[in-house]
Image (cartoon, helix red, strand yellow):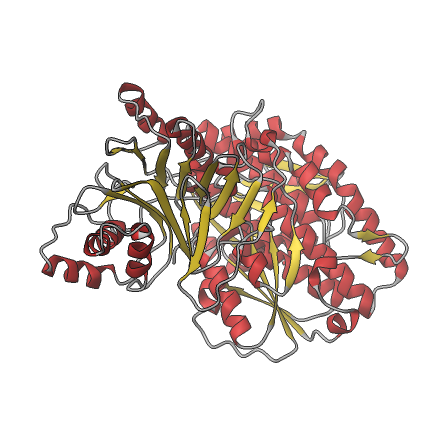
Length: 615
């Protein structure tokens, strides 16, 4: 949820920390702060609002020093204020802490510390953790070289909850300590310098050598290097890896917003998702990362797809795709629900956990629950070094590139493409013929050019958005594989425009939803030329009969739709299993242009952050 950047080296820390925070602002932008040790003591600056506010304050009073920590916050405990912003300081005023996650037993810890005479200044769980580490630090022998490390480890043994944290103390001015449980933290290793960050994108411009901490790891960094310890019994060395980083991928270029840039990147991201995965000779897909033999795949009797938000909607599209192509029963479950309920799954059920970041807390909880019950779990994610990638039995990497905007776009279409590949792979093992497989490959290979055709309608879609700019509510309808697209279209609209929007199965119109229809409420109907076309037109006409404005997403060349819809977004003719990818791009553009027209902060919508790493 929030972003952490820390630095220890031979350069000025402030500009490096601010640069890293800017790259992580999509993780949280309620407030931000920075603390630097400069040889004279600990100096801290914190500001509510965007990182620009912090930069403005530091321009007036710059902090100098080569060791520092910083944070951009998405509020969980306590309001978004200067005082509640990180870093938090302990009772002595000498220790500073930045922290992602939730300390579940902070109230109990706070009472114990208050009984010892400590007085708190904020409403946050992080301040409690800072006080707790400071309390342990002050109780240790001042001559200990590893005093801060021991204090952090002793404090964390009392903690229930999740954390990715970095602590510094002015009595040990050349040391910083990081720890992780349930919230990502990555170590960056450079010549004569080290970084700690919650996301590799914050530090990738300065080092490509990284190590991702595992749960319960504690890393201590000093001027000579780093050392690793663990709060668990299963201690092992860090796995050092090289990251493939292209700075241009994480910059805006000529686009006004990351969301628009990422919408237009879907021509390439979809191509990347299928590159090397189409086997023309066998007329099927090849997904080497599944770590399943052909026999294992044939023995799958049922699939459970779990995820949150946009990933969940991709899974809903995937349900129809896999069942249609492979005739394997598929169930969808919100990760937040699956992790808490006792879902009966037989031993031949395969669980697919879907997450762009690979760090979504509820999805990881569902993954662990499934594995606890002995089920094989595969992941679909965009971060090869994520917790999800490390804890699953195998999976499929999306290759979508960095997705900075809070509203997911290209990750959704990449996930749907992967479900098409899975459906083709399983289908060819069961009943799809070689000629059907070849037809599928041709349809998949046609997608990049078809996406380009859809993107050329951006100006037309903007004009339609201008027409409906005063709408207070919108309804989205779709059937079968388009139902998940209706949900995703509604989600995009509500996320970035703040217009109330609902997605429904088209046939549910008559079961209550029709009461919402009036001349001020536009309805978006997903009605490409497929097996449900006539039924969709029937429902569309019922809305028109009640004076409801209709926007249709329809197949190119469909002349009949013009008699029934007020406005139309056309998509190229495509099979039912690839048409959803084209449909959703029109709705992404519709939401984007509506948000710009309304003056919304497109990439950083209110109350939202990119990766939900807290329960």
